[in-house]
Length: 502
Image (cartoon, rainbow, N blue to C red; front, side, top):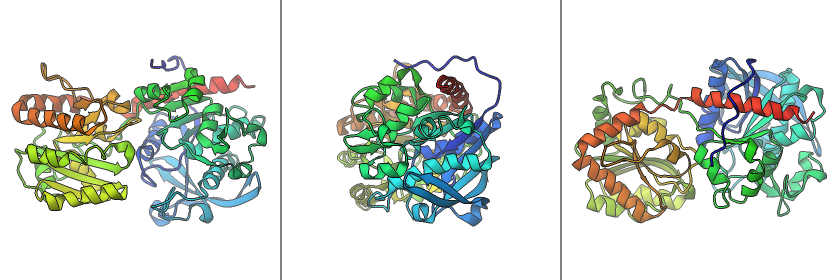
């Protein structure tokens, strides 16, 4: 059962919000969290809140491009085993001040969390320091937040620091914490020998808090100490309260049920709207969709597909990882192209075996399958604009943004009805032509095969329904303003809960 949002009654005062994340567009991104943390602070700022965004200064964040200036230099961060010194740079994102924690030893690396093969051995130390540095920064610049909004395990120690180290610190006396779970598949579990460095005290290394089978658990501690916990869709919230969905954390989230909310992510339509997209060859809108056929031709040319507007193109933009479900596409994609008149345009990277498999398909099926291994923003926009369908066979999907972008571009999603995909894609009804896409339920190759076949047959046999589905999909509106208003209510609820600790 979906937990109701906090009551609509709220204070009229604008808030000081310290937004802390390990990635945010356009500075750093590996997944959907980067999109969220690059968009939500801007919207909150436009709504009148005083928002500051804090990020690590990774090696690839170009100093000259983003023009940061020194904000605090040096800054000492008192960790459990002594003081760690760093520097803080300040930049800007559409009016939002952005602070970069610079520590060459921790963040001066090509990768964010791994080297492309293995996770960095010191991730616990790197992001434990980052958590404490964000709070130290607030003190050093005199920014007294009403709320610290934390995102995923990389910021999971912040709620604990506020309730343990800073509970009676006058500077944070009225500071609440909100912790957002973007993907519970990554929880931040590390060997216990890293725990003393964090300075959280041995009394907090217990099973309900930071301890899990004699290891340190960032996300579990965040769930325990945060004033409110959120996740990125209503359905994903419900899934996280089940043993199968929460990957071991269901009992801890169940204890926080009354303070746990699902808020569907918004879409950044400033960058993902076919009417004003500068990366596609022709703009179009719901009132004049003719430009989509031009984009389709350009997509086919880009991916070396046969340039025919009468054959549907299925687009894929993905990270090749178990969660995304393409291991179930691999066994049947040959059958799809052998038995159906359809083309594929694929952009993806990740697991080497999947890169090799999908990367080799164009040689097998020239003119029918085109693949780009890696990620290129222009190609991603071209797929969204030029494809007829967009395939997302996820095993789980907290929210998903690609299906939301696809609908805006009149590209009909083919999805597994799970998490945020269930909340955003409404299944096609053959009797009425209503819906915004095509959905299946079982995570297996046969379900994918027949659902793709259903979409393709609709393309050929019921083109008037395809046109109707496109219009309905393009009418869907998932603006960040809607989500931000819900976060405002969560912030009020979190502040009220924090005040109850006094």
